[in-house]
Length: 269
Image 1: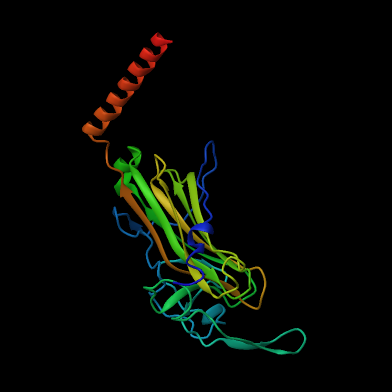
Image 2 (image 1 turned 180 degrees about the vertical axis):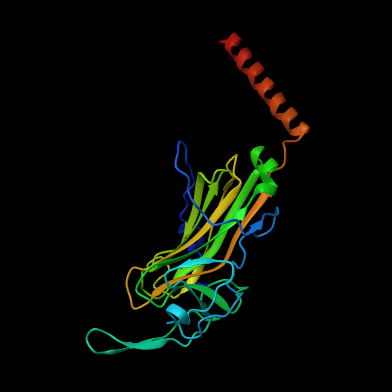
């Protein structure tokens, strides 16, 4: 599709760690909705709810309201094809900012009209939401809950501003049981091209999980604005099938045959 497509698997950055022995309680906001198997649990993960910044420099009260998400800093939503803006740098030169993500930029084929954006200030920002997994507790506690976390993440030209999507699994007492995350490619990995690439990670939901906190970090490194981008964020939990009786029989039969062959081989020696 484009130069970023081949980077999808190579640039996926994954971390999944079981956290044990944590006595302190992590405080999160109240869960906003319950979970359903096989469906995307991240609400407004495509940034389509609400308005979007048509220019790319909105700050403070000018930032469009973003439904569902709890935001920090100048986290914002940008319209695809935003016009860009101009500013005067420290040397008194007028700098034009153009070429923001549009319909033709590398990114999801099913993109809507908007995407998540780090914001119009020289600072990092974030957005989060909490999901209730109580309805899936019997599946999770039987070690049969599998998850897939994915999203389109990226940046602007050679800027190193970057996006990181992280989930934290929490028990009934809001204590963390494990984390998983994906991150955007570096500027070099996307060949200094403005756009987004698909990142994804699979794993199992830790036993005892009752909630999951979704956190989208937009990390500013340099530049007039925070040019970290994200779109089409998904978290899907599915039920792992139980091993079939026939499958278990074949495994058992194979073990017996291997043992008999090994025994015969030792006798012949």
